[in-house]
Length: 160
Image (cartoon, rainbow, N blue to C red; front, side, top):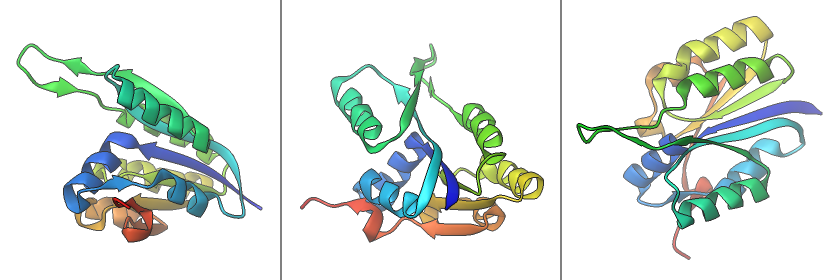
């Protein structure tokens, strides 16, 4: 059985699915797809903690599915801009778990991860599956992946 590690850039997936499809990502369907006939080594979702109840409920849903939820505080700057970036944290965890995984799944469209994906594919002979909204995913990230899986209807929550 393949060993898989799963990493989700929650903010990126939230905003890209909302922007392009005007709906939410289906984490249950995603989990079922990426873990089918695979042994989960680690599954981590990375989110920003704004401290509101709805977000805490969502985070508990992720935990119930099987994800470890890592949170960073939401930082509002004096100039009105905000910060909440997990890129370095995701990169460190991916590097750590790629060593002991056959497959790494990254859900993000962020092109900053292209070098990371190239590195783990070359260094650890690891298959890397990237999930993202095709139209909003960096071409460099798509090209660096072993396999790119576009987020489409089967991975979306529509009002039912």
